[in-house]
Length: 233
Image 1 (cartoon, rainbow, N blue to C red):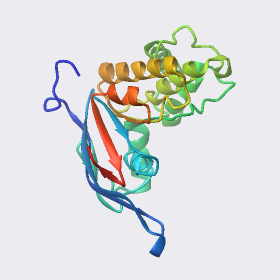
Image 2 (image 1 turned 180 degrees about the vertical axis):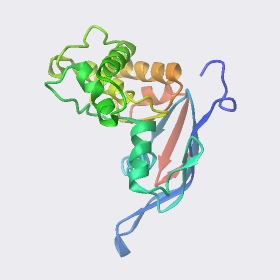
Image 3 (image 1 turned 45 degrees about the vertical axis):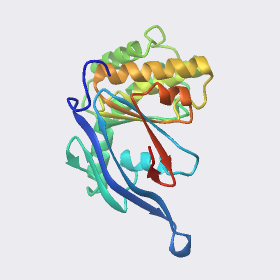
Image 4 (image 1 turned 90 degrees about the horizontal axis):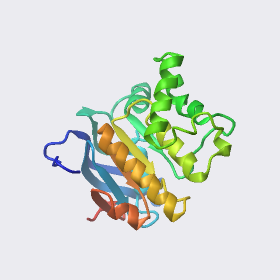
């Protein structure tokens, strides 16, 4: 990130000695084994590693969709791993955005209507304000001319950009992307990464991408490599 070092940037997320076990008794597997790192505002981070190394499990923990067996997760300095389900749900909806390999758009809804879904769930904005914010976010991802187009009339790359705009609807501090280019060709993969990188820079959120795409990883600010549940690089 130009002009700002990580020492100067806000620490959005802190992970300290995360451990996660899955299974029972003799089938118990140590999926995460002492994972620790920080994510800073405005930076793009990638995680690479072989299938089964713990990447998806880690993303579920960071997205507050699962709990570690031990260790700490702090979001904006607040310890969150010990909160109850209702508290986690509030923080997840307010502070974290998700982008997946598949966009999960509602086909018959317009691009704008899809982006407004998280805002409607939060119930804090007027209809006019939701429309205005959705249109702004679609402009940000380069779809200002597709606002009223139904999702099933958009290309795969365009649908993924709508999904990015939807993930930004409630102004998250942390954006988690799980193989966001995994279902796209090379040109669209590059476009999606450029959009994600621009979003991180312009909005000041921390972006963490789980990917097998080496081009995406090497274009990030930092790369974490996982193996057997540990960060090895």
